[in-house]
Image (cartoon, rainbow, N blue to C red; front, side, top):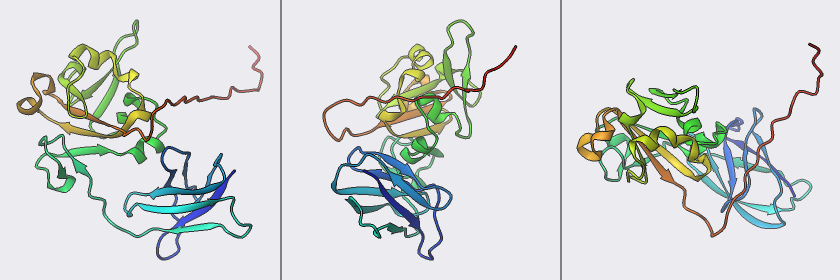
Length: 231
């Protein structure tokens, strides 16, 4: 079944780009230019969804499926500043605006909206980060901070350096974006906190909390051009 609705601000203006996610791990929809969304393949019953957009407080709403014929849901968002809590800059939990070192945060919303499939995709469009393919034979990628090679960037998972310098070069395409809740990036030397592998900076992956035991199968299809080409 489907559930349709719209997202607006307090003045009634539509809000494109808002993320509507069914809890705990249901379908996700993003509002279009007209501020409307459509969640598909929802079982009948009552469900809880979160609605989030940068610059607004995240809301929880109740969705009832099936909808009444005239029951289009309009969600009103309240403006606010989200206080992201980061841990990478000082190894302690502090609000993003209070840390002494500039920290870039790539949120789950941004990862979803960019269509990222791996860690390399998720960080590619962040200012000051360069994902570079360095080998024509083995086709490996590396994350470069401050112009330094990949082995000088320390990659952490939940604050722990679980991969070696070589794995940081060969492994970034193997970390799926679906397991990432957010990514914290600190540019500049972090050797005092994270060791000699963090000369260029630190990329800390905060994994998602699994809502339940099980697995997820994700498939993507790219349609081919049906128009025949004559050569």
